[in-house]
Length: 517
Image (cartoon, rainbow, N blue to C red; front, side):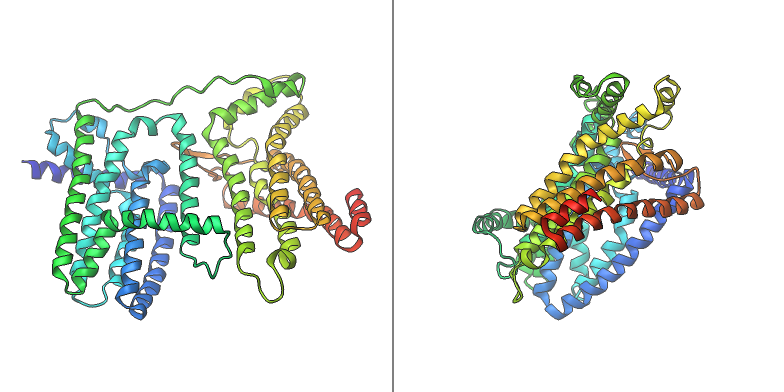
């Protein structure tokens, strides 16, 4: 009886997944293109891993296997935290009303997690990993067994996290938290890039080298004895015909996979009994009107309105935070390049410092243009009430400009100054780069008003996430918009060239003349 019910639930899951893709052909095309791109990357990465594992032997294979298992586990488990709503389209709240036993409902929860679009996206990666890590025909069963145990564990962990955090995930506060989690995961990936670098390749300070050593001492055992590490080590031991060690590690992996599945069962039981309910978006915190004190009249009220949008709307907050984080990431990468060992021609700061500094000053405004050139897009139809009010349109534009510049100007100048101090640039070049960033911010803001009026488009929401797409105008509009966007970005070059060339060729007097021009 339970097998027949599970078969019906699995069929329902497949039909719902197909309907999910058929209801919106635009999203289906995007998913298909993403899957094909991922397939190409999986084929290319699989070929690279295949050659690298065979050249490096079992040692290289074991290391790559462990990291691949950890990456797959982190991506799968963190999927609900990253607001991937399409991962689970089986209505568990409605299914709870069906005459199902708690065990059958738990099995349905696991089916919902396993037969999901996330599994479809990871399928090429799994196939590529299995092909790359099987050094011979005898290794293939052990690699498949390890990945089967890994998938059983991460499906249970992912579903348990999804059910326990269901109320939190549905709240507005989590939309803010998800941005922090995304930034944290990205920072961890970049930290791993530094982690695998040897001290000979990176001229790191002593305190940072010591911190990395402590991190290796603390986290290496965790990486080895948790399920992804155990699965990789068990396959390695069994492939080396060390069946005692391999059997012991497989037993530990089975116990951990069972524990994670049991945790999903507890979460499903609590959800089934009504102890875990679907949450509602929380109310936004009260916000004072301090921002309106510096701008009088209607412009001050509109500036406060923009600030309220920033506090309440996760779309605008996500776009603004991602813009600032991207600029910060580029600055950090430039600084890390400066920490590498100096070449025979001189240090990084002396040779490439001015180029990196001026390039960053120019790149900042190019990154911000994506936000400034569509300043009405996140509001959609809600902005009609403001347009119908007797407030002059110029006042509306000034209020939006004041709101954006209040956040972007200090960030731009601060990033350029920090980069100049890190690279030990000359004061002349530091001041010139800050003037370039200051002037370009105003220029891009001015052009952004024009672009937002004559070339607007809407942000399409997907749950708590957002896609900056133009569903209504079409491809021709997108092409024209892209041309105008890039042409507008080029408008900052004449003024920037005057300031930079004045500083390089004429020193302080040339900088003053270039700034005046």
